[in-house]
Length: 85
Image 1: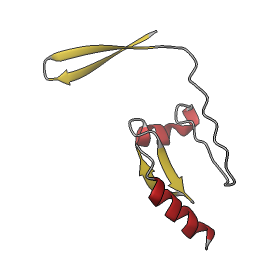
Image 2: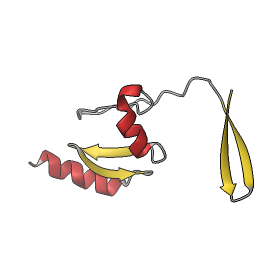
Image 3: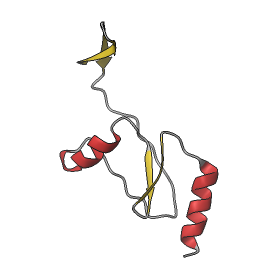
């Protein structure tokens, strides 16, 4: 296990333990072209710096769409608009 120190206030120190076990597998079945970016890989340091606290993040055709939660209505509209182009 790894130990990470984080400050919750000016004088408060909190320790959090992180497990080294394998992450669960999420399977997405789609008709779209899907690009997965593992931000923990060294070659994706730019994305790690930008989004490490904001996962999940969605881009559509290279443009930022949403983060933290999926707005299904917005995503559906954007996908329909993209298919119509």
